[in-house]
Image (cartoon, rainbow, N blue to C red):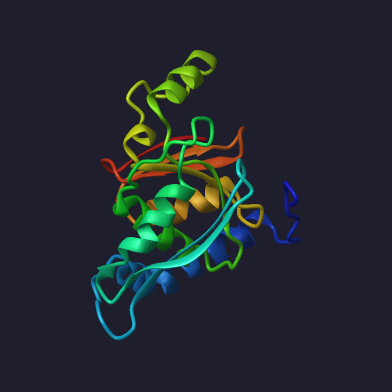
Length: 189
């Protein structure tokens, strides 16, 4: 996996492409959040774990219903890899991830850097970095930190922000985007 992509487009051209994508993807986003239920509506997660090497490519919601067996697989995939402990992942976070992925119109999976974090893992990370929240939404299964080699942190963050459904953090220096289902807010650069 490459760490950067040179598309040959100017910054202005890329912003224009992204703006056009966001406008044409608006019906897809509302559909992803269940405003147009029925008629074959699905929600899909396509991710690879940077920590375990596992890949998840699954449909977790069909025509208004979450699939419990698939959510169990998702919970396991998002587990704290340091402690091998899992937690129920809030479906609102999954919906934000799926909707943002649809907006980005890319087949590349997200690279999951952090899903659920045990309190012990969160405390250890806080001792190493001031950027880790004491009461992180990761500890209650409501957040994910993701990266894509085919899209910039800003592009992923703009797609997540377009969902207007939770918190979006840009961590450009560390090359990842944080998404959670808490209050709508943005931070970082």
